[in-house]
Structures are given as C-alpha cells and as structure tokens.
Image (cartoon, rainbow, N blue to C red; front, top):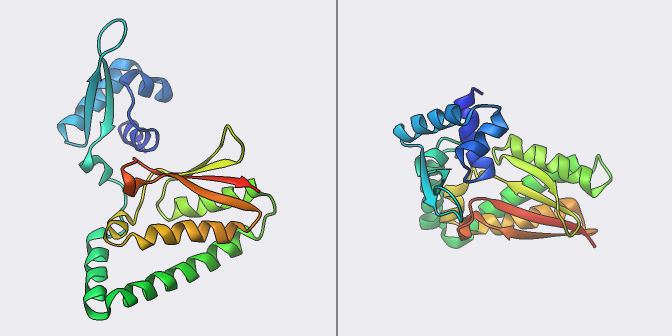
Length: 206
C-alpha cells in the first residue's frame, strides 16, 4: 500500500481528519499530505469541510465521499441486491428468511469453531476481529473505558444487501452473541444503517 492509498485507508478507518493529523501518522510534512489529498480531490474520492476555530484560520477536515467509500470491497453488492429481490418475488419473505437462516447457521458454525480454540473474552474477540477483517469488514479491537472491548468494523462489504434486507444486520448481532457465549453481552453502539460511518459493538463480561 503506497502513501496515497494509506491516506484513503486512514480516512476510512479513522474518519475525518486534517492534513496535519494525517501527516503525523504517516511521518510526512503537512504539505506532502495536502498534496495527496488534493490529488484524491481531483479524482473525486475525497471532500472536505471547513469549520471555525476559536483562534486562527478555519480548520479543514478531509473525509471520503461516496466514491471514496466505493473504493473498498462491497462483495458484488448490485448483484446481491438483484438476487434478494428475485428471491422475494419468487418465494416471498419466507424465502428471504430461509436464506438468512442458512447463512447465519453456516457463519455461526465457522465463528464458534474458531473462538472455541481460545479461552478468554479478549482472545475470542481477537480471533473474531481477524476473521471479520478477512471477510472485508476492516475490523479492529479496542478496550472500552467502562470495561470490556469495542469490536469496530470500519467497512461493510455487504452494505448493499443490508440496505435491501435489514435482517442481515439483526443476524450479525445474534451471530456475535452466540459465538462468544453467554458469559458476555454484545451491544451495537454505532450502526452504519442508522447513519453512522461504521458499525461498533461493545462486548463485556456479565
């Protein structure tokens, strides 16, 4: 991944940032970071907003636009939506439910098998984050200030399918809870489908 692509990655995983913040993370000059951002702006992948500061000049924060987010994998979203629409036309909501149930069963089996090889909640979540990253969710694990952990998913490779059928999102939450076991509780605190820029799950022991 070259420097220009790393800038897109940081905007995807860390949200809106200034050129200086990006420069600090990439060990660049602020001018170097700004040149990369202006190049992406010309290509139509980023945008910016200027906000007034208490002192000095307005602060310019850069973010990915819709085309920028589309640079990341979406698992053939348009085709998936078409298939879901056809299933609903042919078999009704019952057919959609059967598809989601089959997917949930297969995914749960995979996650449970992987997390059962470790014992602590943290280690289980690390395994889960690794699997989700391999699946395209750009997942990371961070401690929560009130205890437990945050499982953060910076990208949704099935976003188009989830918009078409929100049962996919309810299924994801159930899969996490079942694969991690009854000794913890999983709560979704940020949701892409509700307007957030990512999905975040707070997982804590009970």
